[in-house]
Image (cartoon, rainbow, N blue to C red; front, side):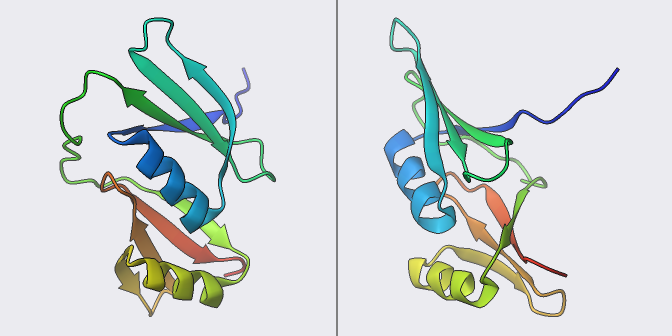
Length: 123
């Protein structure tokens, strides 16, 4: 058997806020949307326009509060073509939540508290 990655999913509380964040912070664009006929959920698939792998944001209508992420010991990682420019933009956005200068990486936090690792293009 053989498998390839299709997408990762993150559940989000405020879909519009999350879409704005992922567009501004990472340049991801909506490529597909699935809405339940009864309005109970919306799935939005985001792409970087380069890789076939996508990020699925799931919004549930009946959700009343942000998700409890527990220890939040998972993350997604993104490579930045211009690491210094990305760092400056993320700093201006106020979304950098952790930096490891020794390793040359940092993390940004999305509106729901998910951490996203930012790596230089080449390490």
